[in-house]
Image (cartoon, one colour):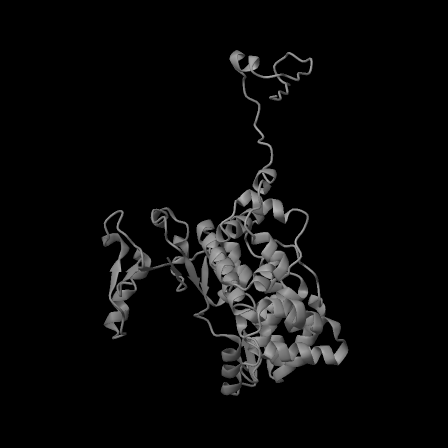
Length: 244
Length: 159
């Protein structure tokens, strides 16, 4: 989780594409497969499940900090996001500093176990468990956990950039990785291993889409070597040609 | 990393009074003294908010920028303005400091102005039980987005 929080900080703190690419590669190279799988799903926006609503997080925060609700509203108006407002206000509370109870859990443990467990509880039991979780977290991870709980995790990286970073860190063709990611990705160590496995024979070829070109003039010489399929339209705008 | 801190002209002008007042300052150099095209890798430049994305600083292609302000605690405030890193340090009193000043002063009646005065006044009334009211019209309410780059603002963009 620490490594993913660091990656989030890196990505969030720069507008440079090459710096983002570098940070992603460093993460994919060093993370365990299960964690990398989750990171990938989150960065691609494939897992945006709301486990606990922002409203519920706010309730839990207010009950634990004795702040009046209108003050939360005033803060929310400045911050613009419940998960972040809760994270900021929770750190302002006067009682104890974070304990170091659960710093070392991996991203996969959080996503597969801890967060769903929190979501499955109800009422006061859930409120207590969420607050215990908040108490155990340093500021940056607190924000991240709240974003993951409320399903609002987003960071400024495109699908293309994440795909490129993953391909380069696994030393694969970018088109191949994009092809393997088609049709969804379930975050698990096995799925990640499959995704980053060396290319099988001809797989690389099937991953490559047919090249697409914008309309361009055709030289008469090129016509002779090509068997043409032409619609009967000679005004110069529409023509398809297939090489045999 | 060089110890010498580079300064935008507006910041450099403040150095004289600080040094005369005996404030210990690190070695500094005005940016204008640097040759064109000088390598700024690993160097720190302090500039006012108005210099962000200005032409003068645009020539340092690889520069990374950050913004120093209490507002940097809020992710959106940083991202809307397009700053890279945010350094959370305010030249204003923070919430806990304000409350401490108010209770420490033992004032019976508090007038609140500048910034979120309604919010603080209401909090003092309802939570601390101190008679307080906003004093409107003396200062503009302050929001980060409206703070558009007053050149003399002590908040600084480090580049």
